[in-house]
Length: 252
Image (tube, rainbow, N blue to C red; front, side):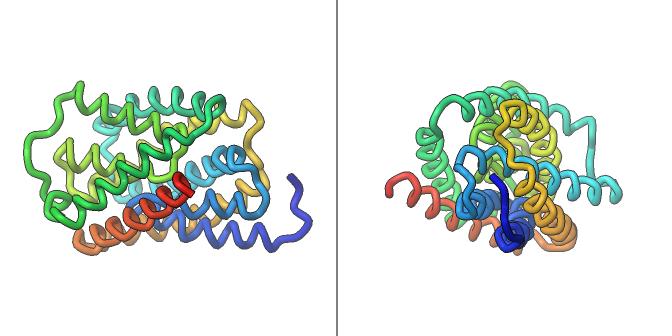
């Protein structure tokens, strides 16, 4: 698809700033960017693939800031990233060949459940109770998250926050940093597959990526400075909005 004027690309870039900020702090930014890419004329499947360029650039931008400040523990990262990459490869291949309706229903139910827990038991996100998941349980949770992330991406940050905070005894700030690195690593594999099938609109991808990098960097700075109370409420609002949007898409 060729763009005859700059207005659609400016709209995409502006949306990318908001999506990048939201993605780094919590998740759900793709629920802004995917509808916008579809609105300017991209097929939903192409929009799903094109969005991965911005996701990768946004997370690499945030990672640069975290790395500079010594916030990334690389030995720990790979235990989280490798199962997610394996899942993402399968999820991406599924997205290429199979309609996403079943995954949208699962996402709507899962995100709604997390929204209820955020409101009903907010302290569990600041100071998770219970023992961390055993290695096999953690790997399974991360594999499942990567599977969904490779397939659709929208809302995957919520699943990673759930797996890392709820199952691995991390606070919300630590979980956000791990989430950014894990998503960046598995998105490289996912994007390579989508691109090999010619499903990426590179013009729209660059416009969205510029916005996402700006928003991602702003979100990373806010994550390092903001207290956990504000981070939790941002996450809560994002979960509720995303759940409503997904339910609307599934049942309309």
